Length: 537
Image 1 (cartoon, rainbow, N blue to C red):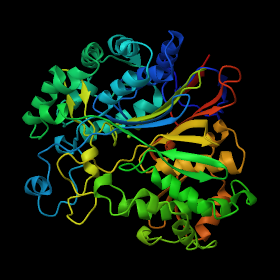
Image 2 (image 1 turned 90 degrees about the vertical axis):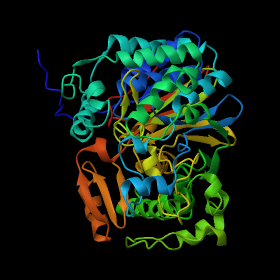
Image 3 (image 1 turned 90 degrees about the horizontal axis):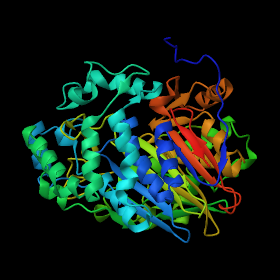
C-alpha cells in the first residue's frame, strides 16, 4: 500500500500531562529521551540522548557538526551553557577578501569556509559530566541504534531534504552521505547512517574527546584541508563550551531567561520590555491592534540586536544597557498605534535548528537547542564519520567597523536560543521556538498568548504566527484570520501570506510545570509544524 501522506483535514494536538516528559520535533528522539528516563536517568541525561538522536532523524536541521545552547534548572537554580564554537585561528577579514573578492560582505553562506568549530558534542559531554546520572556512553546508545538500523523518513523532514538537494549536491561529502540513491529519500523510505554510528561509538567511548583531539578531529581537519578550508586539529582541541549566567527580564510577574550574547535571545527580552508599557491584555487576542503592537515591539528589538549584538568581548554596549527600563520606555514611545514603521537602532548608552526540552519528577528541567544553521548547514559532510558541518561562519561580517567582524577565535552572531520562564524565583516553563530570526519572535508571541491571554501551551503553540523580515515586510501564516491580515495591511504592513509553515514560522516545544513535579507533573506541548511528539510517563 502506498499512502498519500498529505492530510486534507485540520489536525489538532492536545497537551500531554505527565511527571517525566520530553518534547522534540521527531517521535524517535522523544522516545530516546523517555528510554533514558525509564533507565533511571534524569532530565539532563534525557536531553543529551535526545540531542544525539536528533542529529540522525532530523539531519536537515542539525548534525554531529552542530553548535548548541542550554538553559537548565537543576532543582535549585538556573545554569546556562554556550556550546557555540569560534572561528578557526586562520580566519581574518583578509583571509576571506583574498579568496572571495574585495566586495565580499560576509564569509560565504555554504562550503568549507562557512564552518566554525562545532560545539555541540563537547556541550553534551559538559552537561553529562556536571549534571547527569547515567554513564555518558549509555546516553548515546539509542542514537547509535537508530543510526545502524535506520529509520523511515517522515514527511516534513523529507520536504526540507528535497529542497536542499539541488543546492548542496556539489558540496564535498553531501551527495555521498545524504543522497545515497542519487536523490533525496521518499517519505517512508529507510535511511541508515552507518558513518554517524561509527562517530557516535567513538564519541561515547571517549566522552567526546575523539571528536576534539582524536580520530574524528583528525578526519575533520584533513577533510577541511583537502577542500580548501582552514580548520585544524588545534582549533578543535582548544575549544571548550562556556558556562554562562542567563540574562533576564520581568514580564507581568514572570521572568524570561535567555542565553546572553553572542545569541539573539536578548531580542525577546527587549520586545517584551517594550510590550509591557502597553495594556495588551485589554485587546482581543487575535485582533489587529494586538498583533500590530507585538510586531512593532519586535521590529524595535531587532533594530538594536542587529546593530549591537556580537561576541560579548566586541560589543559596544552591554546587555544591561540594552535592557534598561528607561531606554525601553523611550523605544516604546516610538510606536504609532495606527501605523507600521521601519525602525532604526537606538542608542542604549544613553538610556535550519532543532529544539528539545525535557523534565523529570525530581524537578530538573532542561531547555536545549542545537543547529547546523541553514538547512544542512554548510553542506559539507566529512564522509568517514558522517560529520555534517554547520555554516555559522556566515554570521560574521567582513566590515572592519562591525562589532561582528570576523577574527581568530571569535564567536559569530548566533540565532539559536533556548528559553526558560520563572516566577518568584521558581521554575515555570522550559521552552523554545526554532527557526532563524523567528526564534525570539516565537518566544514573544507564545508568551503573550500564555501570560496575557491565558492560552494553554499547546494552543499558544498552534496559533497562527507572523514573522518580521525587514523594513515593513512580514510573512503571516495562511491560518491567520483574513480580517486581521487586512487590518494589518491597512496600517502599512507589507504582508505575504505563506502556506508553507515549515519554512517561515518556526516550531516550538513547551514544558510548563503544573505543580510539584513528583505529584502534579508537567503540561507538555509540541508544535504541529514539525513531525514532533510530546511524550511522558
